[in-house]
Length: 217
Image: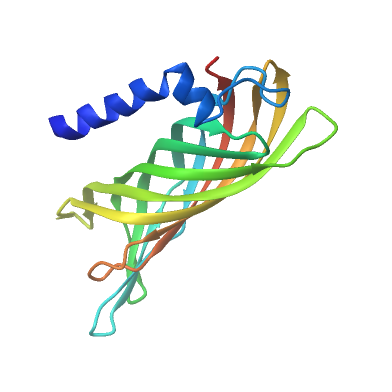
């Protein structure tokens, strides 16, 4: 990040921290639905599954790379609007190991790992209930940096691969209200990565997480 961009970001945060801007433009004054104000943070982690990575080329050759289950961790800063809408900026990291590769039906074991770094803008709609359970649904869009490392199959090493792509995701979750705007619960996210680069097709993955949401003030 260059100095101009960094200075602009810091100036925006400084302006947003002033009472006049915060209460007048962002409407950050506490309300019955958000007694601690609208800004909140969240952390989550869990298990992730990746659909087989499909490969194809112009010659008609087809292949698949099998991926083992792995783990994912995420952190986000969010803003809770006066009604039931929340928006977030999120960063998450996912890691999986490779299992096998199949080319034209010939399958062999494969070693290596897949690491994904996500950064996204999310929007969620909270569903009002007359209980402490807080269901929600929503989705987001962002970028993903993928690193395929230490790949080898049949004693043959494959060159490491890095790529940057666009991702879309949808998520549903159910939190339990612990009081004072703190909640805890599970979620499921489906992610589609647009990765039609070279011989590789788009890919899908699934994340099952447990997260904690807490107010900043």
